[in-house]
Every structure is written in C-alpha cells, then in structure tokens.
Amino acid sequence: MSAFPRTTIGGLSIPRLIPGTNWLLGFSHTSKAQNLHIKETMTRQRMAEVLQVYMDAGIDAIYGGTPRHTELNEAIKDVQERTGRKMIRVCIPSLNVKDGPEALEESAQTLDEFAAMGADICMPHQHTTDQLIDRRNRRITGMETYLKMIRERGMIPGLSTHSPETPLYADESGLDVETYVQIYNPLGFLMQIEVDWVHRMIWKAKKPVITIKPLAAGRTIPLVGLSFAWSTLRECDVVCVGTMTPYEAEEVIEISRALLEKRVPRVELQWSRSKASIVTA
Image 1 (cartoon, rainbow, N blue to C red):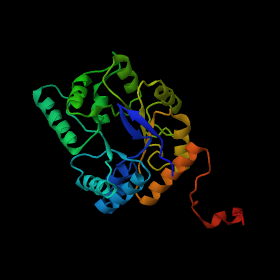
Image 2: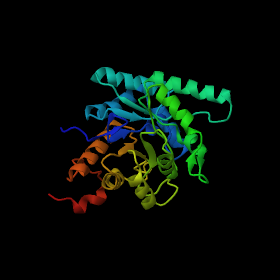
Image 3: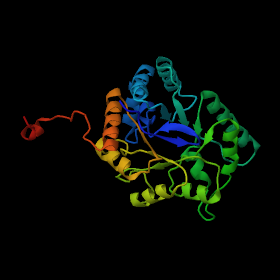
Image 4: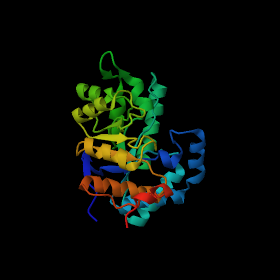
C-alpha cells in the first residue's frame, strides 16, 4: 500500500488526512442523547482500535484532545507502543484571554500542560481565537502574546477558528502562525458564510489549512463530503474527519485514497431490500 499523501506544517511532515476527536470524546453536534451514547460507548480500548487503523495506514497524527482526556491520551500511548511510532498531536487549547497577569499566568500554565502532554502543533481553540477578532481594524488583537508563548514551549503555532476572517487577518498582519483551521463541507454546516467564499479564502491563505467537519457531523455520507473536500482543496491542505469505529476509519481512508487516485473506492455498499432490483449478477 502506498503512503498516504502528506504536507508540511511549520517544517513538520503531517498526513493530509487526520482523525478528529469529537466522535471519540462525545461532541456529536447532533443531540445530548448522541453525546451520551458516545461517552458511554467509547473506552480506552475502543479508541485505540480506531487510532490503530489510521496508524497502520501511515496516518500518524490526531486533532484534538486535552491533558484531561485521560482515556484518549492512554489510547494514543497504547497505539504508539504497539507501532513503535509517535502520533503527532495537533492540539486546540482554550486560553484565558482576559486582561491582567492572573489570566496570562493561567494561559501559561495551560500551555505548559499541553507541551508536557506532547503537543506538536498548538492552535488556540475557536473559543479563544474568535474572541480576539477585530473586524473594524482587521486584526486578531493580542494574539501575538499567546503565539510567542507557544513557540517558547517548542510547539508549532496555528489558529483554530470558525471565522473565515481569521486566516485573512493573520496573513495581513503577519502573525507568527504556520496553519489555520476552517470549517468546510458541501452543506455549509456551521459555516458563517457561503461555501464558495470559504473555498476562495482557503486558496488565498498563505499557510496550509486544516479543514474540519467535512461530513457535516454525519449529515452527509463519506463519499459526498470527502469528494467535495479532496476535489476543492490545495495539495498543502489537510482534511480532519471524525470516526467512531475501526470500520468507519477504514472506509474514510479507502474512500480518500480512491478519490485522490481517481478510482472507485473498494468498499462494500450498504445493503437494503430496496436495492434488489438494481443488483447485477
């Protein structure tokens, strides 16, 4: 099997497909009931089984998770020990961006925890980044302080955001960042402006973009969401997708490979009696 295509973020080689953690940690964007189902279902062992599929395919990175997500962190360690390879951590900490020394010290402690956990790429979460967006002056006010703190701790800085302005303003103001996050899917789910506008802004970004929610949190099937992503992104960009089971991980990887190689995916289609009349011998 050929290696999965890779890109480079801040000098670090990273696969262009990476697993997200919402569907491992219980953030379904569907309902409280679904969130509870995920939390009750996912164990350290099951998380490791999902991540093992990615590692076996050469996809050695993961997006999300915090020092307090003990089972996820232990599952990552399990897979690393079994494979003898490190899993790149792309982390999205929430920082206290209020004024004053106490808030700054709290943010410093948070970043210390993420560095100690082994974060390679550190991208302040949307909850942090989007508080600081100044549309009037086209800046992300005060972000320089936190990006410097990330560099000082040996992590590669980026910005996680749900706002399409963030890459534009960061590029215009010369912020020290190596990558951005953007929500990007064919349904426009959770996107603040039209899909074609976000598409154009991704292509104008000066650094690689990590796109999240490509399947609109399960609202579109993998072939549709992944076809859109792989056919409209640049070769430097990344697709982050959440999966709950090893079977889902295998499908996502195979469909992505097939789309990039311009062939039919080698996956078995879902079956119901309504398809009986179109099955060929």
